Every structure is written in structure tokens, then in C-alpha cells.
Image 1 (cartoon, helix red, strand yellow):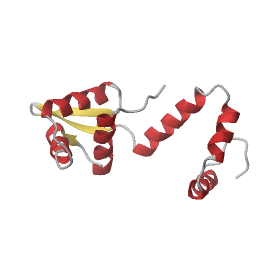
Image 2 (image 1 turned 30 degrees about the horizontal axis):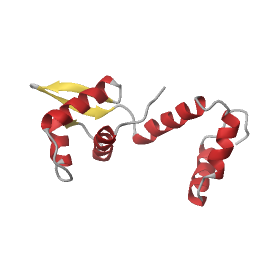
Image 3 (image 1 turned 60 degrees about the horizontal axis):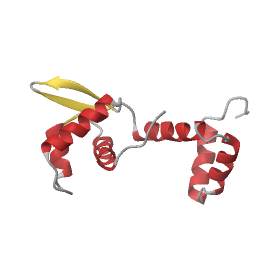
Image 4 (image 1 turned 45 degrees about the vertical axis):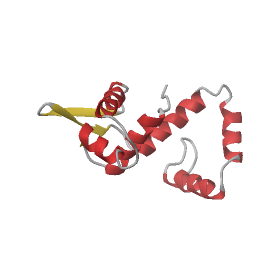
Length: 124
């Protein structure tokens, strides 16, 4: 089961996803300090936790680590959606409620996605 992220975890992951390249704790700290007051050890601990959860991979550079995301934000979000659907109890009813709540833009994005990747058994 994929779980959602806490507020600081989400902020760090969003920063790394936007950066699209490996970053040290210091890099992330400097990026986040433009918006908030935060300690180096706090960022280091959260990034270590994200590594433990399998969301970041890391490699040593000298005495520090350089981190990068394991998957794209879109792939992570898709995993959250699948996990929520799997735990819903009634997948058909859940999907109906989901479709009822789509904005016209979201519905168009869903239709476009189904053209690219039609469900199994459904003609393209």
C-alpha cells in the first residue's frame, strides 16, 4: 500500500521533482530556505526517511549523500490512486463517484489517456 506524504515530505519531493536531477541535503536546504526557516538536520532526517520509504535513492559523494527521486511525480500519484481504489471496498462505485467529480479538463485528460493506453480487452 502506498501512503501519502506528510507536509514536509511533500515539499521536499515536489522540490526534487521540479529540479529533475540529483541533489544533496544542502541543495534542498538552500532551496527550501527561500520559503521557510528550516534546520539542516530536519531536512536530512526527512530525506533519510524518504529513502527508507523507497521514494528516494542515494549515493555517497564524499561524506554526504546525493539523492534523487525513484519515480516521477506522475508515477507516484498513479500509485496513490491505485492504492486508494484497491482499498475502496467497491471499486465500481468508487470509480463512478470519481468520474462524477471530474472537471471538464480532467475528463478530457482521461479520454486522451485512454486513447494512448486503452484498458485490456477494450479495442483501441
